[in-house]
Length: 122
Image (cartoon, rainbow, N blue to C red; front, side, top):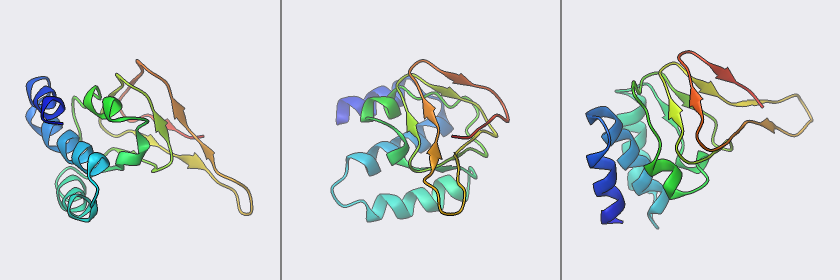
């Protein structure tokens, strides 16, 4: 765990460190309530990001995530994001849902770059 957090702090920018470490700690913790409150206060209020740790397939996906400008990013909770992804500001990744039907969720593979103000729906 400390090795992973050390990797986050060595290979990330200041704002990226804050967001990724909160996501990592919430996903790996047994009691998630404290980190959920911290995520809501910091990520949503300061960076205007709604990124849920369950959006990532593994802890490695959070560690290798790259957020060059981590502002105004919205990612649906049930989306699946792989390792080594790069997400720029203003990105929305979500689902298309119709009344009475199941969600069509987006699936983001490994080594993907998502550009500024992109919208990806299932």
